[in-house]
Length: 301
Image (tube, rainbow, N blue to C red; front, side, top):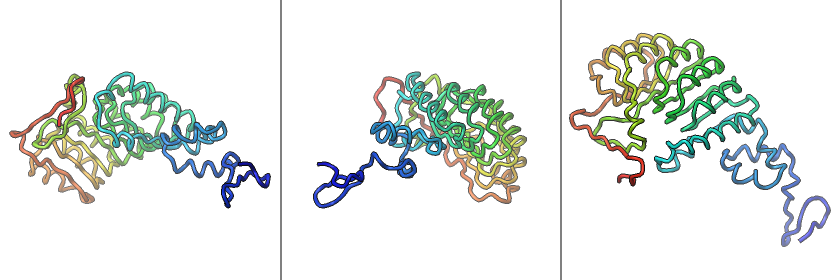
């Protein structure tokens, strides 16, 4: 099989096929933009140097989203190991470098302070940060996010227990565009809990300062429109602080917050004129069941 016209085409049967190696960079970028980061890593980047260079273009590295990939696999206790965290950190740092400061969205799990601090110092345009289940992300890197990523609009720190209420103050003061905050905790009580895949010693660090966090949210994040605090330990006093301070709330999720009752929620949220959706606790703690998966044990059914 050989070229029949000298114009980068080869004859296959009765038709003509383009020589993909001669595609313009603009065409490659258009095609690669439709692929995920992982699809590029296991596909185009292995074809040729020109294709690999195209995958490194900053325009293809403004969004780093591994969340859909995590959701496509059953949760594993191996995700909580230092080796796995190192791999995630390496991946995130490489995307930060390729973005050349243009990264606007990060959705990842099990990264650490190392890569997040690296991103915070180099990506001032960051608007969305989702770092669920990151046990080794702490206030140290969140302070860098607060100081350098002033355009932050959405923050999800669910199940990341190394982040304390101290970070909330810095974020509230500096990130005035923050509209969405998700601070969900792992379920502890309830009749139909899923299996929790996490080290037991990590589960023991469950944040217990729900009212303090609520007070800070109400005071320093008045612009919030969407708030999720599932399984928080806050009481009616904490919820009142949030509702008085965050009057623009349209979405509120306090499911799993067993220290709240229906009357508390109704009374506190009555002042939220823009509230459209609310999720409330719906179980009796007296019949609660918790399933914990220990490292090294087979997954429970």
